Structure formats: structure tokens, C-alpha cells
Amino acid sequence: MRDYVRRQRHDGLPTDPWPRVHVKAGGSIGKAAPASLTVSGSLAQCRQWTGLPFDGDGDVDVPGALVPVHCDTTHDRAVYVEPNVWIRHEVEPRRR
Image 1 (tube, rainbow, N blue to C red):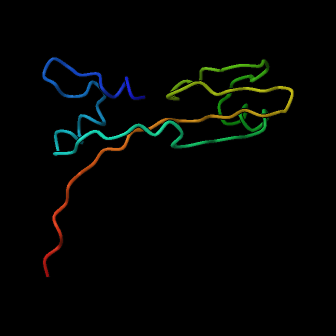
Image 2 (spheres, rainbow, N blue to C red):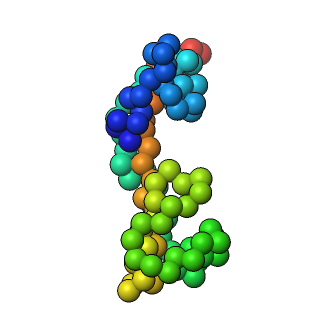
């Protein structure tokens, strides 16, 4: 994630559209969060959620996911750990 979010277009803005929106709005890219979201489920649940077989050990590419889902048939488990990045926006204190 750290390397990905540092990628820039020719105009110096991030290549990823979502960070680009924030940078255009005055935000600055902060630190990467390697485990921002974790989803774990039985293989049956993961099959139902994705329509994929989850029938072998290892990483499974799921369309639309940022990273592969790790499948463990011995323990009947699949785990998705999604990275993220913090983007900081300075805000002015509210005046009363």
C-alpha cells in the first residue's frame, strides 16, 4: 500500500482516483494501514459471498477486492485483510 499510494500521474497527483480527490481538496497522504479491515468466514460463507469455489489452500483473487483472500481448507477458513491509507485534512476550529 505504501508504494501504491505514492504512485503519481504526470501532474503530480495520485494515480488512484480516491486519494486524488482528497489531495485536490487539500488533503495530504499519510501513513499506510496494512490491516485496516479484516473479514473472516467459513469456506461456505465465502463461497456464498463471492460465488467462488474456495476449494484449495492459498490466496484467491476475488474480483473487486484490493488484495487476495487467504484460503485455509484445513481450518475451514478464509480471511481477507485489506490495507488502507490515512489522508489528513486540516480543519479550522468552529467559531461560535
